[in-house]
Image (cartoon, rainbow, N blue to C red; front, side):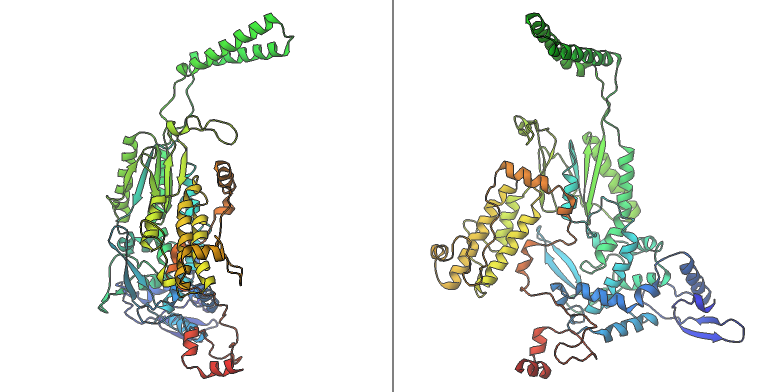
Length: 613
């Protein structure tokens, strides 16, 4: 091939200047990349490179050999608290510099880069089981973020609107917003994939990625999935299936894998769709025309001069029209209305069914067979079930989903004075689940609110900030619910837990704290106080709040924020450090790297000299 078509490959370049054009020949080293795949020959390598340039696939050179991509990736993830957790090599992002980027790019050029095994930890689940979580090394996090950012730009336009997990401008709120419009849904299939991240087939996922990535990007993918993980005994385990849950690439890879499920369910939605238009008969046409003639007669009588004869005829015409309306539905023949709805967030999905229970069982069976045959994954029998939302609530993404029945809708009216339709989806606050979670987190003992012992040693402002983080987070997350007023009991527990925490700190009782600082626990020095939601909490206000929240710009979140995440890490500001900036202490531009305050205070002479100034 000619020099202008040169792609970065394995081996050494040999340049032949004997001809008018500079020709480049490439010798391939038969290296073991620990991918389990056969190393390509010279001819295969050349064919792959030619195809990569002509097919418009994602270029390894443009993505993985560009230092700006690594700097952007570092800037994006540097301030996240989880990135200070040591990986399998017991290192963190503390001290990462331009020199590290240069070394990574050098390894990428000669194809010697390898992902290190992730550190595997286990976190408890609600059912008592353990969920495995992989923590990659800091260097691997940067590389994964560069890879993820490039691949996401290709797949994001291909993803369906029904997929909401780990996507830009998508969140739990956009997913639950979709479910809120499933009016008249009779059955809901709650889908959950069994051990999803641990059972993803590497070969099936590779076939999906090969359509858009060049051969060198695919080699990097194989290094990622075959890197393995480190167990507690420092034993490296390599698995032939699964993607380490906890890495930056895992969410995107899971969405790409389940994209086929989204497409399949779309075909089911078209296959089982039957419109709701009624079929008119001769009798229904006659009744419809009679009603129209009666409407015209009533309109003429109402506009004419009013006398006893006209009023009598008007009364008789209205009675006849009313009788016609009652018998209209008797002559109208409806077909069997069927419709499917679908929404997915990561490996959890819901399928709404307007139709019979038999149809819902058929849809569930077809989805199970598709996942087993095409993707080689299985539905969890314990968690996948068919539910009638009018009878039993459905729990999805921390929300409680119910459907209004005739008893609920009877006698109720909306803000316009119209009767409420039955079969309308209601998004509710799971008060019992939140109550249990507050108990597990130590905010109450099952009877009354209690103090947080770990927060007694904080300052007055820090205590307020922590409780406000939880209060605002809960109010924001459940802002779309129809019964947000039910969260008042949860806010009561948090407020009095804050009173009790400050009382234990100052060795006072709760009553004296309220007398001294008020019900908002306001700090007279800084002015900080507990957040108080709007006081006017009634049905009219709640309806207005819900209508305002229907604007999609109000509910879009790029990131899921757990209100209880404040329990896991200290409050700290985000780092403003940029890799190309000079040192904040000496002004040098050489060998710049960020460091935490603990690392600097551990004996850095320059830092101590700087503090003395």
